Image (cartoon, rainbow, N blue to C red; front, side):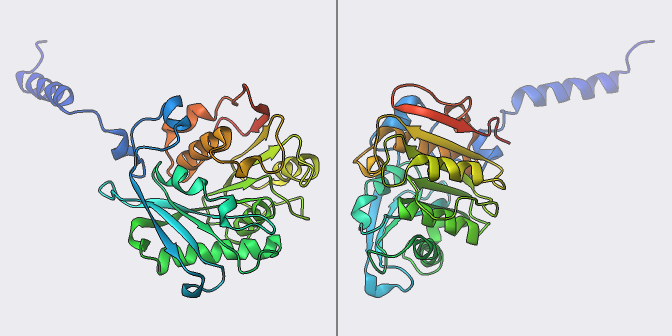
Length: 288
């Protein structure tokens, strides 16, 4: 029986449409993608593809934390950005984590490096101050319209890293957390739902990894995604060193993957990274 002409015409038209219609861009599939496709070189570069500006926030302008510096991309044509607040460790000022501000912001994030209300504030207080900083960013800051309030993250060093875990436990809606050489008296964190990358240092004598970073990774029993990066031949202050290449590389990849849901960065996290400077890396690969 001959194929009906009408049916044949419909099939031919459909075939032409398929050929003529361009494939959906990855940005259309994921509206949160920001910036070009990543490479090893782009992850390890001192600055990312976005031009940035900084805004100083005076202590007197805010409540609940000690002010800080906001770093943000100048080009918002692609849409809003995810945001991350970063707090320093015990007795330190924001200068200890300041290098992460432009490093992360130039990759397409709004970053707030903060000072605390007191330099000796404990980890729980630092966690509350991280949340106060995020609330300020999203409701009162000069860049609030650039931020997607549903894509927020926290980070911190030492007792500030413990504070990042506290913040994630307090506010389960946070998308990601980056505790760097973290310290806290609590070792288990079943309430944390944020995708959490913990960075430890094998020679850390202030927050030994066995009772802190590594224990926290094991204790994140409720986090759907988590990873543990242990720096080789490194001490407690390694994450505060200017442009620490491994901390920067994997912080960017982690935030891109889980704050921006950008699967282009998956290959830098799974399978588990290895090589110079990495003593150990554990993960929950493959990521969902």
